[in-house]
Every structure is written in structure tokens, then in C-alpha cells.
Image (cartoon, rainbow, N blue to C red; front, side):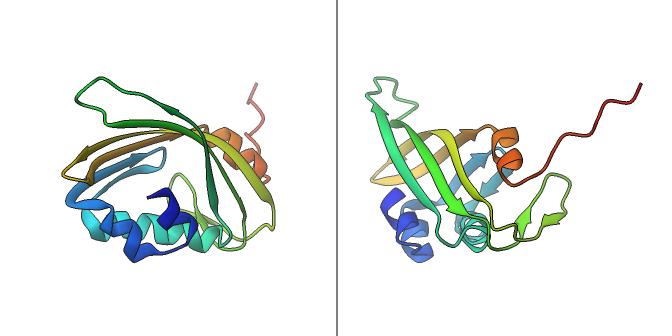
Length: 136
């Protein structure tokens, strides 16, 4: 799946997932090929040079989790990026390097569950957004 995403091949990405797979990330949940495809399409529109670089894979003995990996997500913000609350941040030209971790459950060679975690504040601050000042 990482290779397909790094190749920006959305059809290949979707083929890595079972038809009824569930993807859970910091921005929400996507269920099935259509929603999962939309999520990754949006990510590639926002970061057309997106690249995931795995740096650690952990052996897993738990039958509920088939693969655990840590990676760095890098790219340049060149398109609209959906923000919490539904608004979009227009292209900033900023480069990102965000640390992340993913847990996948795989059955019959297909991902049935993919849960990715990254610090949204780390990403949003690299895009130039700041938290509002506290109100006294």
C-alpha cells in the first residue's frame, strides 16, 4: 500500500483494501473503496509530491493486528487541504515532514482495517496555522 501511495496510483491503493475495509485516521473514518479512495485522492491533491518513508516495522503476535509501522509523511502543500470543521486551507507552498504510525489488520492478503495516527498540531503548524490566543 505504501508503494502504491508513493507511486500516486489510487487504483492500486484501493486494490490493497478489502471492499468493506475501514480506514481510520486523525481526520475521521472512511469505509469501503469509494470513501477510502476519496481520502487518499484528497491527500494527493493537497500534497502532489506526497511520500511515505517507513522507518520501523514491528513484529506483531496479536491476531487482531497484522502489521505495525512507523513512517514519515513528507510533501509540499500545493492544493486545498480539508481542515477540522470542514473548511479548506488553500495551498501554502509549505513543506511538511510529519511522523506517523499505522496499524493494519490483513486478511487474505487485503487490508480490512487501517488505523493511522499522527499529530495534527504538528501538521497544521507546518502548514502555517497557529492556535488562537487564550481569552482572558
